[in-house]
Image (cartoon, rainbow, N blue to C red; front, top):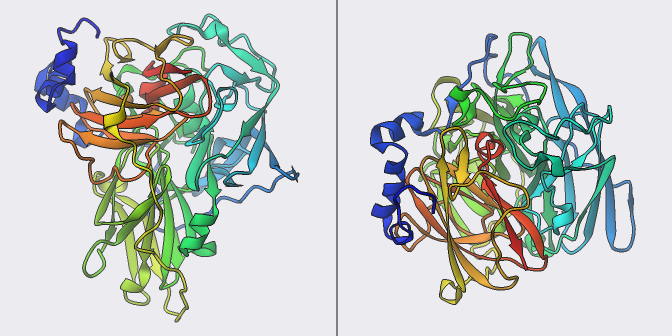
Amino acid sequence: MSGRGLTRRQLLGSGAAVLGVGLAVGGPPLLAKLIPGGQPGLLLSSKLPLPAPYRTELPVPPVLQPVRTDATTDYYEVTASVGTAQIIPGHPTQVWGYQGIFPGPTIESRSGRRTVVTHRNELAHPTSVHLHGGHTPHDSDGYPLDLITPKNGATGGMAGMSGMSGMSGADYQPQRDYTYPMNQRAATLWYHDHTMGFTGPQVYRGLAGFHLVRDDEEAAAGLPAGPRELPLMIADRAFEADGSFAYPALDPDEGKVGVTADYMNGVLGDVILVNGAPWPVARVDRARYRLRLLNASNARRYRLALDPQPPGGGGLLQVGSDGGLLESPVAHDSIDLASAERFDVVVDFSRYPAGSSVRLVNQLGSGSTAEVLRFDIGTAAVTDDSRVPAKLSTIEKLDPAKAVHTRTFTFQKSQTNWTINGEEYRPGHSLASPELGQVEIWRFVTDVHHPVHLHLDPFQVIGRDGKTKPGPFDAGWKDTVDVLPAEGVEVAVRFTDYAGRFLLHCHNLEHEDMAMMAEFTTK
Ligand SMILES: [Cu+2]
């Protein structure tokens, strides 16, 4: 461990020792100051009058069609480009979008059928694309230095950049074919920018889209489908007076990594977008709907709840997590959703009166950030042949008793950056070398909120805060876990199939850009 006076034994101990990590960053008063209102970040206020909520219809991103298919593979082409979005009425916003739109188009894959996405870049800055939740070989995983050359061909910007080591190792290609074997079960994945040092500003400007994987098991479950299946990308943003996205970058031209000191904990916006629209309205039938919730915010955490709750409560019936279907549904009154987490829930609007409205609210927000989305329920009698089976799937349980290694990763602030085990991210420097096929226990220990994400394979939460059981939002296969302040989370993980360098990092994008990332090398 880094020289903070904590022994390995203390770190591996109970929650009390874990709390010691919190104390190490300056004791409870500072800790409290670092976590305003349970949020990892600072609110950036828009410089224009906010639009009234619930005035625009919920957009649903278009589904991208393959440019060709053959016996084994579907081929797609995506170009990152500048586009114009109408987000705040009367104030067009320039976005950096896949196909020029935000969110980008949704890609749909079939489990077991290979997907190849050719990405091109017409932006003025390099990009790298990561399929979040993908079981993907290293060379297609969107390694932060595997870059796509920008439109003007400039490739020098990353070399010798201040504040980040290893930038000179960047590999530029004019376009990249990302090959996804899709040897994985049905799940809600998303693709987003993963450029070294600039993931935060580039995702904020719009480089994110859904990538859904479907399979026969999911189809047989009989969950709501077609127009009654809604992908919902929730993201907060702030706006300048002219309607452009406001982001406190140290250098908007990306000559320098990071945000201004005040926003180092994370950038929180005052406008909540769902699929790119501010507080939209979804017109729904009085029937069951499947909502694929994704928190695509840079830093904001949400506690989503229906308001009003349906009679008897439990209105958010969770059927899936990051890594696909749960074994059986879990009813929630509210769901905590950290950056990059996905929750697949079924809401039965027939539990509400015809013609009524129900809001999806954020109980961790206040004022404009407490509102998210409104459902206006129709009056027409409709048929609904969907169902939610009591048993959705079978999940192989990773046995912690079989673990061959226990590794601890401590997520902490340094004077100027964010660190894992006391180290700032250095490309090519590996913190662990797990063996393919072996179960390991990985422990994530934090100072403040950190949503911890592993590439390559999902994991199962086995304990939190010294207790040997998962939290209420930890069910199923996860690839991102919401680690609370001064908490320790234990997960069982088993990497499979692909040897090579992969990433573990905080998915608070300001933390990630400011070095809270590390590599592990599977062998
Ligand atoms: Cu973090």
